[in-house]
Image (cartoon, rainbow, N blue to C red):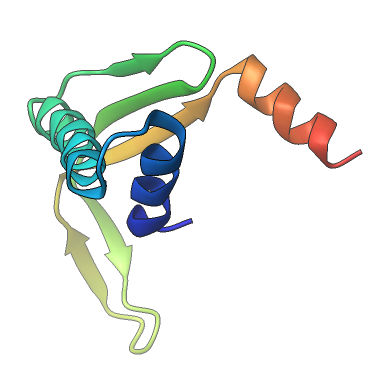
Length: 94
């Protein structure tokens, strides 16, 4: 599913115009993005948690040359689905 598909779904289910639906979807994504940029956790009941984690710098190895390199510290985004979402996914595969 793409952003355009999400906008189309909002348009069909809410009765808002396509422009209004696009603005709503963009607003939600912008709110999620700015919250995560601040390092804050996002918890959506029945869906899951988005968490920004800090990874320390470490020694690594270039797979092509075998040379040791320094991998810099960075922030990563993790997602942990809720039990409700896991159940819905597993029930739909049955």
